[in-house]
Length: 89
Length: 89
Image 1 (cartoon, chains in turn brown, cyan):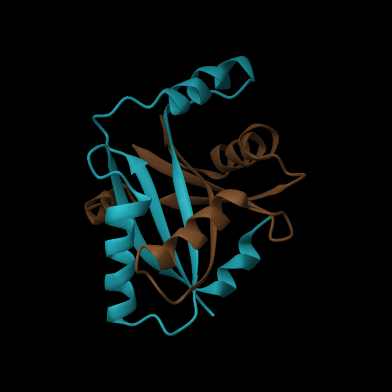
Image 2 (tube, each protein chain N blue to C red; image 1 turned 45 degrees about the horizontal axis):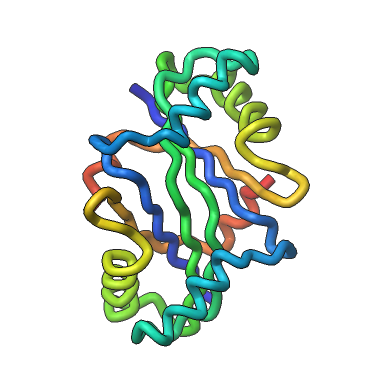
């Protein structure tokens, strides 16, 4: 089964309080050298059919109208090899 | 500045009510052919220094102890070319 990943992040000019909270906590926890943290959402969609242009166009529309709020968020759509799952720790 | 991305997803055996809610809404909204949806978190970390083994080891520890709850979540750490930002829509 094919997997398509949609990443949704706040636009760079939009304040990200979640990311800021993480960034501020890091030095206290002993982690240095991180200049900025942004937190967003990741959607993993398992497709029933093949990942063709029609499927990707549909997912793009879905991301634009439903998964992301394009007033304040950017999104990217990409196909992921399911074998990548092996990277998970 | 170098960017490292940490993706945090619920383990496959853990129920994902957010993903299920998205999946159930899709047919109502006219999107067919999506077998499963999982929703997770994406952290974008901007590093002050270079992305060397020490930095990646530190980020791995950070992800394991702080960004992810490894009892119920898997995480992946990967370096992203900042030029990728051009993909954003």
